[in-house]
Each structure stands twice: as structure tokens, then as C-alpha cells.
Amino acid sequence: MESHLKVRNPKLIAFVLMAGAFIGLFSETALNMALTDIMGEFVVDQTVAQWVTTGYLLVLAIFVPISAFLVRWFTTKQLVIAGLILSLAGALLGALAVSFPMLMAGRVVQAIGTGIIIPVMNIVVLVIFPVAKRGLVMGVMGLVITTAPAVGPTLAGFIISALDWTWIFWIVAILYVLLLFSSFNLDNASDITKPKIDLLSILLSTVGLVGVIYGLSMLAGNVFTAIIVWLPILIGLIAILLFGIRQLKMETPMINIRVFNIPMFTLGTLTMFLGILIILAAGILLPMYLKGALLVSAAVAGLSLLPGNAVNVILAPVVGGLFDKSGGNARGFIIFGALFIVIGTVIFATTLSATTSLWLVILAFIILFFGMTFVMMPAQTNAMNVLPRKWYADGAAAMNTLNQVAGAAGTSIAITLFTTGQKNFETNSPSSSQQEILAAGTQTAFTFVAVVAVIILVLSFFTKNPKKQ
Figure (tube, one colour):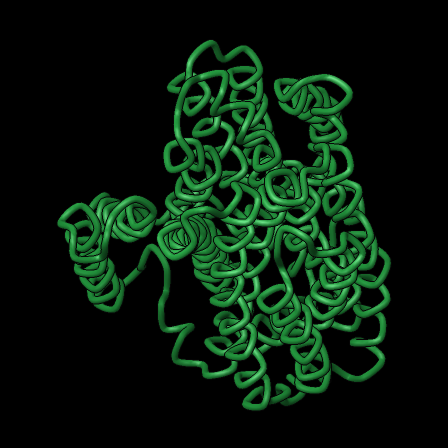
């Protein structure tokens, strides 16, 4: 049996999908650097403004599992064009926004488009390349997944300094238009089976994800015992449980959650989940810290994050090639990378203050992303390689849904701990400057991030390499 599906131009398909996903994932965090501008222009506070990121991630989390259905109903070309058109429409709405609700509407529409493209990318790329080349291809795809949200604040810093924050949307819109012209010659690379659409499954997954993420986001301004926090989370968890039970009873489930019966898929997905959580938490904390505590400009803040992103860009394909040559030795790669993630996050958790040297922040970020490069691709590839081909769509949908939940959770928890840390420090040191208070909040949030990094390291020792299929 062929190990892959033969198409006319697999590289073109991979390029269009990865470029579309990169732009969409870049847009996840690009506005983090513009939060202070948005707060001032639309007169909203921190907890409301962070919804431009959290809301985007929430819509992605809702739409990714729905896309598991769509890839069985529509061709690759149809889905890619639809995803790009929606993304373009959302970017234009954001660029023209005259109010915060209009900005959020644009973010929602753009997130729906990205939510279509990402699952198609994960499924199609696995199908159109042979197993022997999968490490390198997954390395590039891992680069898209990790670098795009990480580089968002960096590039946005330059854009904001040179122009203004709305140009983030205008530039993204131009890129979507260019990609649209490249997408009309794509071959189909998905199995069109047209399964029955189960509206109850869609409702349960939507309620579940909205409940959990909304409840977490409300922690920023409330204690956990507040009804606005625990009730949505409880409702969300019950809906997710009912969703899981329903999937197990359905002949053609929305997502075949039996993929989680395979231990290495579950472990790889959990590792990815925690990695994305760290990336998105750092992505929202560091721009605020650099601009608010160290008082650097948006351009300098963006430039400070550039070396870490560059390390990821340069190393990702290299690590992919080494992974292939090693015969898929995921365990060794993940343990090695996890050690560096722990070192990077511990530096952040123990040294950030209003007087921290900028070079130390840059160094810690480089160390963090050096480690991420060795963890994310091997974890994802190892997880997907243990699945039979018929479960690729389910595995990709499950993994991507959890990745978006991780991003939303990381953003929400980071803002919550950031706010809590500031309040506690201000209470204990009422004469402190605003810079010292903001730095203390950032350090509190990074303490949590460091704990998550330690969990990744512990999990890495349980990773097993899959047997040759």
C-alpha cells in the first residue's frame, strides 16, 4: 500500500496551507503588542482588551473540531479558498474597526477562516508526503505552529512603530489576497465521505469550549469562587464530558476520541498542549513587561524577541532533518529540549524586575525557544505517527483543538496571574512605582509558566518511540 497520496504538486499544496496557517497563527498574538493602543483608542481595560487574543483562540478552538467534518464534505481546494476568503474579510473588518465590538467581529471572522485552514494543513501534509520525509515536513509545519504566534509581537512591534496598529490587518489582508491567487490549482487530498452532521455534537463541543475558556478568562478580575468563574467552567466540563460519551456511542463520530486510547498520541498531544500554553503566555506577558516595566518602545520590544524567534526559524528544519536521520528518536529530542525550556522559564521567573538588563530577557527567550524547537515537532510527529491513516483527521482535529484551548488558557491564566501579582505587590509595597508593580505581576505569571515547563520535562521521560509501521 502507498505510504502517501500522489498529487501533482505537493510542495505547492504544502506552501499554500502552511502560509495560510502561518498568517492566521501570527494574527493570534500580533495584537498583543497593540493592547495598550487598543485600550486607549476604544477605552477598555486590560481584561476586556485581552479578548482580542483570547476570543480569537476561543473561536479557533470551537471551529477546529467542526473542520474535522468539513474535510470529509468538501475538497481541499474548496476549504482553502473558503478559509482564505473568510480570513481576508475578518482582516478587513479589523482594519476598518471604529469600535471594540467591530474589532472583535473582525477577529471572530478571521479566526473562523484560520480554523478551517489549520486542520486541512495537518491532515493533507501527512497524506501527501511519504513517511521517510515526514520529519522534515513536520519540522516545517511545527515551525509554523510555534513561530507564527511567537513572532506575532515581534513583527507587530515594527509595524506599530512605523505606522499604526491597524496596519497589522492591512498587511495581513494583502498576504491573504496573494495566497488566494495561488490556491486555485490545488489538487484534492482528502477523502470525501460526506458523513452525517451531528448538530448535538457541535453544540456540546461549542458549549464545552466556550464555558471553560470564558470561565478562565474571568479569573483575571475575579476570585475562583465567583459564580462568573466557576459556573461557566463547570458547565463547560459537563458539556465536554457529554460530548465524549456521545462520540463513543456514534457510528461516525464528529471526532473519534478513541485516538486517546493510544498512549503515545495522548502523551504527545499533552506535551504539545503545554508547549503552546507556554508560548502564548510568554507572547502576551513579555510585550507588556518590555513596554511597561523596562519602558522600551514597541520597535525595541519587538527587536528583543527577534533572536529567540530566529533561533526557532533556523533550527526547525534542521531538527526535522536530524529527527528523520535518527529514525524518529522523539524521546531523546524532547528530553534535551525540555531541559532548555525549564532553564529559560526559570530565568524569567527569578530575575524579572523593573531594573532587569534587557540582554538577560533576550537570552532567556533564546534559551526558551531553542528548547521549544527540540520539543514541539518531535512530540507532534511521534503522536501522529502512531495513528493509522484513517485516524489522521481525528488525531489532527483533537490535537489542534487542544492546542487552541492551550493558547486561550495560557493567555487567560497569564493575564490572571499577572493582575493578581500586581495587586499583591501593590498591597505589600504601596509606595512602589508602576514599573515595579508591573514587573512583579509578570514575575508571578512566569512562576506558573516555569512549573508547566517542569511538567513537560517530567513527561518527556515517559515518551516512547513508535515501532516501525
